[in-house]
Amino acid sequence: MVAVVYLRDRPEVIAARISASLAGAGAASAIVGAPGFPAEWHWWSLPLIALSASGPIAFWLWARVAFDDDFVFRPWYAGIWGALVGLTLAASCGVVTGAAASVLDRGLTFSDLGLAVLAVARTFATWRMDLVARRRRLRVAVLIGTLAYIAMNAAANLSSVAIPAWPSLVRNLADALGLCLLAALASWDLFRAATIGPALTPALAGMAADRRSSAPVKDDDRPAIEPALLNRLERLMTAERAYRREGLTIGSLAALMSLPEYRLRQVINEGLGHRNFNAFLNRYRIDEAKTALADAGQKDVPVLTIAMDAGFQSLGPFNRAFKADTGLTPTEFRRLALAKALSKPLSEVRNFEIGEPR
Image 1 (cartoon, rainbow, N blue to C red):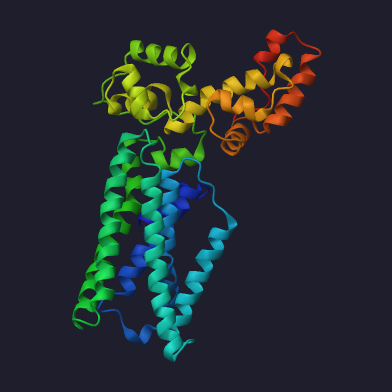
Image 2: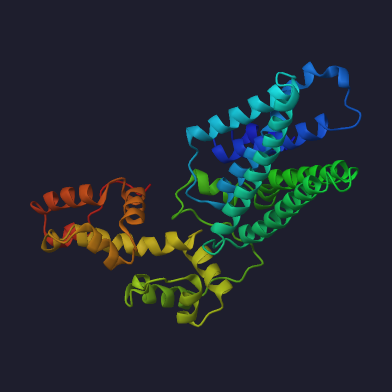
């Protein structure tokens, strides 16, 4: 039901497709693994087996799309998806036999655990930068559930020699836990949508709109953001240029404002619409870089110097962030801006922006 609703309401959104795949994989796993599922329906069950096999990679991609605002679906993801499903079908149909079948089965088990580990790593890697309170709480549930699933599977594998009866029992419990986790995560966005009306949920909104300008979902029970706090933060970032400080974190910025960290997250997210702390900092850094690149007096200053002065630690992240914001590389932006300066006053060039932010 959850999968069908996702595909019915948002078929064009990649996040909805991944959530639908996650829900479908959980349902297929429950059906195929049910004790009463008829063994004589083996060939009819192959589509269900294929859908069930997509669960691990759908879970990994779900963690990417839910917790990474800059996620882009790559073609090679589909290649891995197809390979895992194909190998699982080969094992189920008896195409591979003997010792090779045992190796394949163990390999598929380890690939499932590996994808779960990658999902945990993605959940943890962007935790500190996340400014959305509900999404941060969701990360806790994902970490606890996934780590429990990994631990139970590891226990089943390690106990196969010492206590022969344990592996099957523990693995069944791990599968049950995994199904509960898949169902809960796949339906999280859907049930969240039911409580906020027509607005897109955080994960889907991050894929469907510009990350920097998309308005966060607000709850009536949250306190309003005081204008004085917003003004103080803006002064700290523009007049004092705090974004230039090396190693600036949400914690150190909160200390500069004499605010609890959770409160500063709320101010930036609900008051300014940012979902990620790096995106918040990069707004100021990119604006400063644009001004410097469009300044004819700095035409001989290396791009790397401009990036470092603006607060970036290396050229690679600067180039990626700049192109994501303007659609141009810094060199292209500078060339076009300086060319435009020949026909416009410098004061206009400083405010010049090429293209819409992406």
